Length: 371
Picture (cartoon, helix red, strand yellow):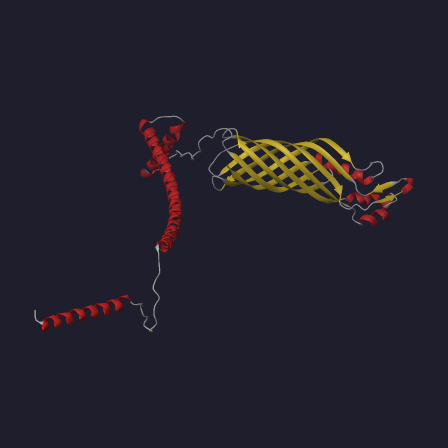
């Protein structure tokens, strides 16, 4: 090889080596930002990479837990909805099965013409339908009347009634006629389809002006009496609490109206007292009379006869209308003052006897609920 060739080869090798060093310096030099500053190199090791990996894992777990929470909330809502629809489905299924069983029983009774409590209503309804359809098909004058529909016989204590009634009571005595207001609550249950028993509580009250004050004109204490209580005398208040038991016999049981006859026996606790109670003493002709705070308590029994009717608006709601005649008997009483020293105390006792021995006529109307 000639010397020129060797020199050219050496020059080429040195040039290539220099270029390689320059490229390596460029590739391995620190990065420079666009603004011309050097950028620091990222320094890391295995522990730092592990920390960074754990941070990423926890962030992913947090996102995952949030998604799971949303999923559980949605699952709770869908479960509640599933419960509601399942309950509706079971109720509808039960009602449908009951209707199917009732229909099958009806068909079986009609096909075999069976008799008995379970089949009577179907056979009777078919008979009534036949009568109606025959009458419609042949509209001729007939002397045969179609009987009204009658409800099935009810079992004892199968029907319960509650009623609240109010009205007026008139006491017609030998001397006085008094009008009172009354209010009562009654519970009733059937024994048969025509006979029932009932219990009730009631309250009766009235007020009346005591005309007996006029008898004091010639007894020496007219002026002090009228000064204390006025020219018209004193007002009297009567209050009575009653408890009774009774029975009803229904004359008829139609679809709307159920007239009845009734009888009741009761126990009464009554109080009669004056409403003006200014106390004073009067001593006409040497007698010491006392006035004020007179009260008369009594208890007695009574018996009543009633005539009325129930009027049904629906199967469970109706009203009652009733007129009754009652009479009191037996008496147990207590005076708040000595009758020998209190003329008005005597007056209360006389009025009590008038009420108990009077003929009491009552008219009431009320609301009735059937169960």
